[in-house]
View 1 (cartoon, rainbow, N blue to C red):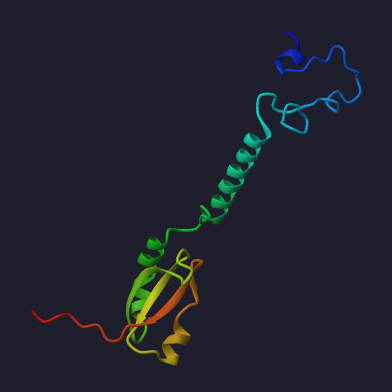
View 2 (view 1 turned 90 degrees about the horizontal axis):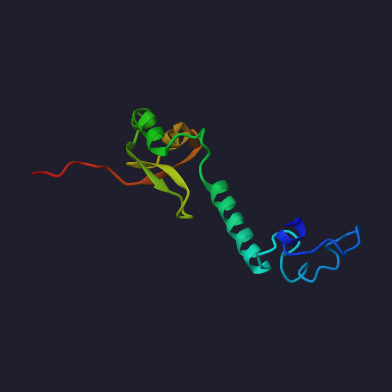
Length: 137
């Protein structure tokens, strides 16, 4: 079987110059490249591939540590600052970007100055929670 028969196009009676130019499936399907695939199938494949690339671009890079590990490594340092009563993992207002939330008993310029804006690439956000005391039994 010739190559032309395998891809659904017979080259034997065609001129040697630009054999795909007169092929009827060139514009209506991808017969010149993928003989059994229609153009809409190729388009769906491209859309899926671009979507996958988008997801991969949004996912954290492999060199970036997990946010829970970052919190575990820095929670004591943050809790030593004045008026800090708690720290936890949260998300920014966009609802998908992870961040470190620092709970403050009261906002003070000194604490705001000492708090880092980012820790290992994760944003640090303050939240006024007030004093936290244990419940009485």
